[in-house]
Amino acid sequence: MIAKLRDAKEQLSELVKRAAGGEDIIITVRGQPMARLSSVLPIASNQQSRASFANELTRLANSVRTKKSAVSPQSTWDELRTDRF
Image 1 (cartoon, rainbow, N blue to C red):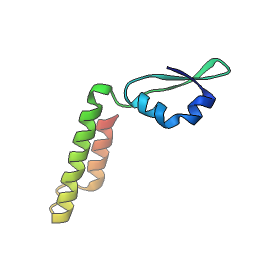
Image 2: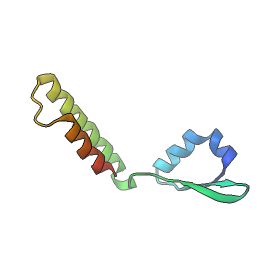
Image 3: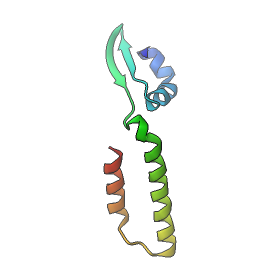
Image 4: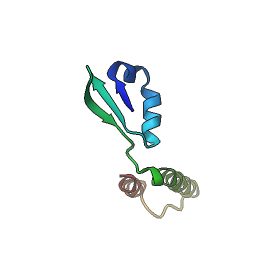
């Protein structure tokens, strides 16, 4: 999809949703392409990554509540961040 900068400003939320869904958005200024809006995560793994991220956060929250934390929160966060990119 190609969007003018003015339109992109007005519809940013919608454009971000479309980009997250796998569509590349080209933003133009005076008819010239200037920027591309695209998904950070691969489309196939996007849902899977979200689910595993949510499960890991739930597991960590439960371990903190029961005070049975086997790893530090920072090391877990660092590991999860590297998995997402």
